[in-house]
Amino acid sequence: MNHGLFFCLAALILGLPTAAAETLTVAVASNFSRPAQELASRYEEATGQAVRITTGSTGKLYAQISNGAPFDILLAADSARPVLLEESGLGVAGSRFTYAIGGLTLWSLDTEFADLDCRAALNDLGRHRLAIANPETAPYGAAAKQFLQSAQLWDKVAPHLVYGENIAQTLQFVASGNASLGLIAQSQARDGRLPEATCQWPVPKDSHSALEQQAILLRRAEDVAGAVEFLGFLRGPVAHDVISSHGYSVAE
Image (cartoon, rainbow, N blue to C red; front, side, top):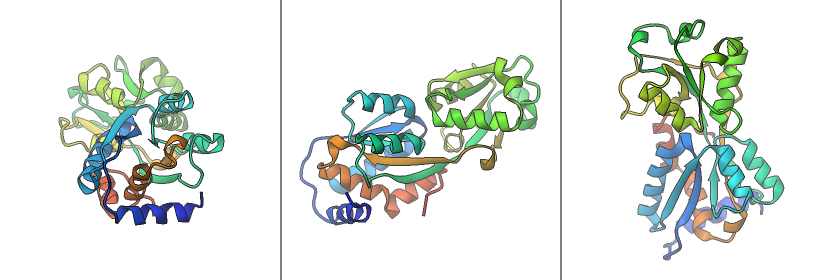
């Protein structure tokens, strides 16, 4: 399907009343769970189309899709898996685009780090543990590992690492005290529901691969009008405002 035609069609559909339809199922990377829920709510209010959000690490969602999971859309935390889905035919050619660009933050609730330099703490963790997402399945974990390697800290911190299955579990480890520090998503660090951090440090974006998060329409939903419409909505100004409000950059 032609890329320009695909989204022109989506824009036209957005202007029409939406008939009752089956619930749209969107697989969403864990870091994007909160904005995805808000986007789904806004979309449902505007169109009447129900949207179900299923979250997990991008790697696990990709594996589930490859094994036939009944998802209509993937909102990944990277670009690699959407590209693979497109190349394999499991994703619709021309539907893939970048919906958000994320970042990493080193973050702590441990009172021992109050008013201290979080970054300096990585040089000598002592008895403290550092939580990161699993680099094998979670793009934010892969970015955390890249940063630690670029800073020549990987070997030093490796004995202190605690791995979250995804970035949401990584935050849970730090928030619960099971880890003193965590490399979490920048958007998570901005979540007003969390207690105020004792220290935090934004990880330079040039220290890891860009966290370019891409969406793709999955083959099973190629002819599902609501799925095409939702992707068109995701590229529009209302969605961009929501995404930006959660601490992500939006691709132009």
